[in-house]
Image 1 (cartoon, rainbow, N blue to C red):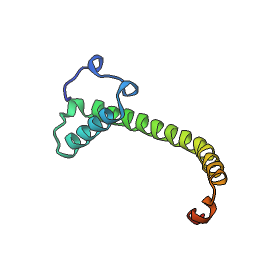
Image 2 (spheres, rainbow, N blue to C red):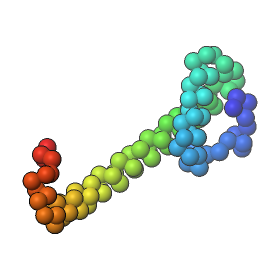
Image 3 (tube, rainbow, N blue to C red):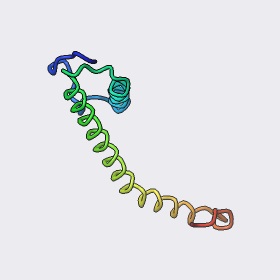
Length: 95
């Protein structure tokens, strides 16, 4: 990706998670190995930051959605346990 013009770069918000992660890995590898020309170093570093921020935003959003869904899942599990005859006897211990 070294040498790509800004207009050729897909915004991080439009990349799939796996694609963004792969690009970030590539940038890190380039930086670690000294493969980035000094003229493009800042652009690559800014791109890495853009991707990290986008991935972090997605992870936080997914975590918030999961946290919001957990009470619903627990409620369904509790209803199922109450409805099943003898379920309390075979249920794993809470905790």
